[in-house]
Length: 160
Image (cartoon, rainbow, N blue to C red; front, side, top):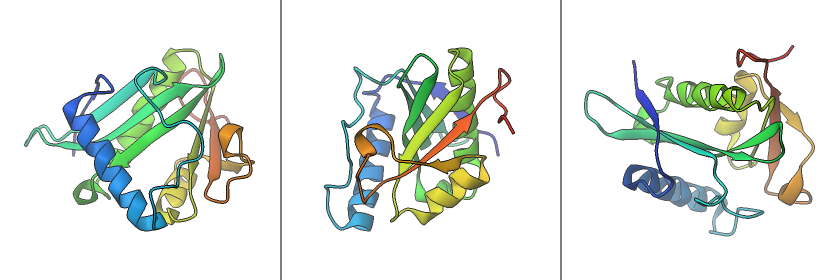
């Protein structure tokens, strides 16, 4: 299947709806709405926000964002795929688009945070070439965080 993946403003209606669905799912998984260490992403600190849509229906099916951490490192934020589109490959397509955007900006390392109540996300990132790293930044000391990283080459492929 092919999706349309495009940059959108942080306050885009489709992106806002996807992030709200993600939040509701995470609230249910963690049993509360207090499961995000650190500063939530915002229009002021997100460098890129992507939304994937199904071209046949025009419906939004997933999203993901990048937040710059250093001159060479970015963090994936708000990576989410609607339940009905999981297993279709759209999550990989969004992640690869984020990685390519990072390379285009000169960033060589991608980091991310997920949590122990998201074993499906952990498996996904490991399958896609990310390796677990010590907690970083605002996640240090968090029992709700598991952090990952991937080094990129100029083509976006992983460094062995």
